[in-house]
Image 1 (cartoon, rainbow, N blue to C red):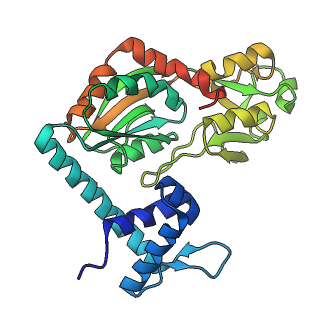
Image 2: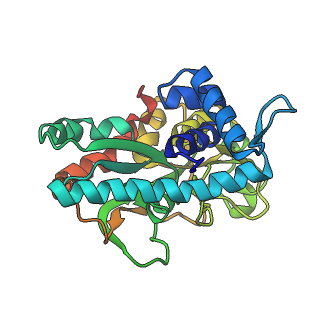
Image 3: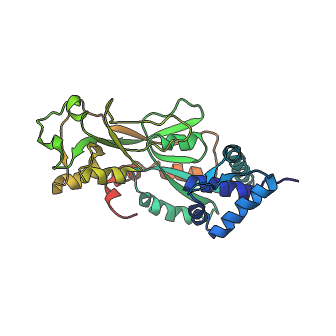
Length: 310
């Protein structure tokens, strides 16, 4: 008798991703008691302890970690099977997951979603925010079918198709109250090195995380996304590079100042990316729509909206 269910594995995956039983319940649109029951029943059916509840917060045991690791392979395989069956029947995917770099607000996709839903395809759209190399990682790890705004070069992996979106210039910015504000330009690396930098944490899970703009030996404040990075620099907590379009309003108001540096940072290249093995109608619709260069330009410029609510 099979004691594992995809539903239980999905719950376990959600608990790990969201950080708690209650957050997993919210993400899965269930009540917390249902999540607790599923975990307890899974432990009873397998006769193993999946969570260590001795501390303030439940933690996965060694057996739980192994179940989660292998269970994610099963979930991916089940999702892939579901999509293949749907594509075989209609050509439309059951679900299409789009990973968007945190540099761009999710709201930039809303007009496209309106047009997509008019197709009445039945394809569920899921949008995730990834940071830096996490966009590539989401594609390689099959957490995403399409990546919008993947920065830098793709990983050394076959089966990935890319299309350039454009470039984004970055400038070195600080609060007027920051100690570096008083130093003459251009700032040298030796000047910057002694002051805290702020970086958005790379969300990669499998690929090695990428870093940018952090000097060797420099203290770093790591925050979850680009919006938090902007806020930290406005507060004078740290220095760092920001997209020019994002920083511009604050440069004009005087809340940030731009400083020339001796070693300038080149503009970052951004890409659309998808797997060559994926050929569903939903993906093709998005690729055809995103072939419009004017649209890609608007997406590239949308980082200026990060100071606005979602």
